[in-house]
Amino acid sequence: MSTLDLTLQCATDANAPPREDFAGWAQAALADVECACAELTVRLVAEDESAQLNGAYRQKPTPTNVLSFGYGDSLPDETLVGDLVICPAVVEREARQQGKPLADHWAHLTVHGVLHLCGFDHESDIDAAQMEAREAAILARLGIADPYLTDAA
Image 1 (cartoon, rainbow, N blue to C red):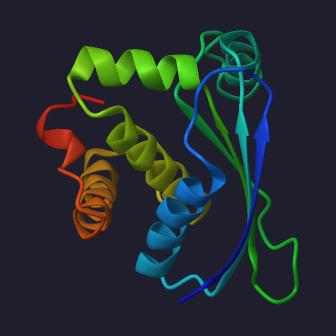
Image 2: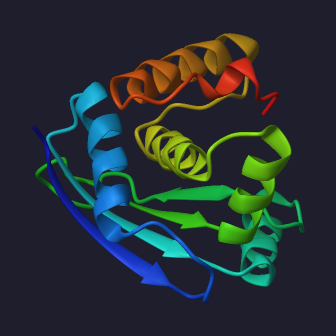
Image 3: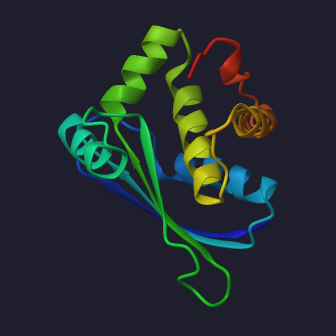
């Protein structure tokens, strides 16, 4: 099992899962990629902050569900260091629109964000298929249905 130091920052008053849930979901993703040590911050933000960050870093000035910011080789012991910025309003809206349990969608987006920090992406069809399969397998081990069976994201 990998060592995880997870900080949860709440910059919005929206309802969100407890820190322990985020830690469990992140731990599952880290174990899957055999990451031995990680320092992660999960920051929960309002739609305006999400839109600002999405505009600044992805040139898409609208709120999004999750953004991942990795800090490369910042620690000499190969500790993964990164931030996930999650917008609860978007997460809740998507779960409702997609007919998914809210907790399952939180888990999926946390796993998705952690995999981005670990170097996975979905820029090509092949990369997307590999990342989605990995996400589905991790979520299955957590007892969560494949999010891509009902999600076109």
